[in-house]
Image (tube, rainbow, N blue to C red; front, side, top):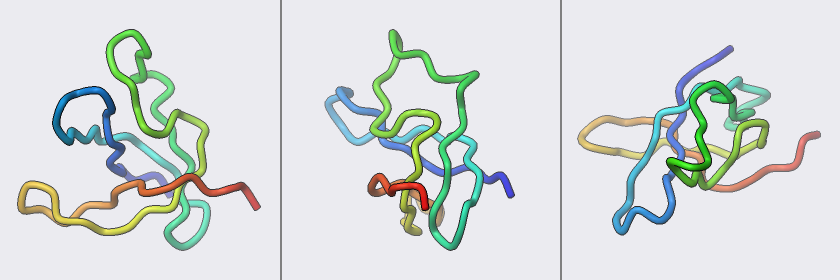
Length: 75
């Protein structure tokens, strides 16, 4: 199932997160999508499209969202 997860945008001077579509592979493991919205000349994402990531629920701006916290190997 596809959901939006939040990925940190690097080199912004402060913590900034981008909502990115991802496909749930298993519990708390998602494959980052967003091939159509990623522009390496505009932003540097912590995790690129195609990467498998571990997510955890965090509160961003008063809303509980899924945030990518580390890369996971595909199993």
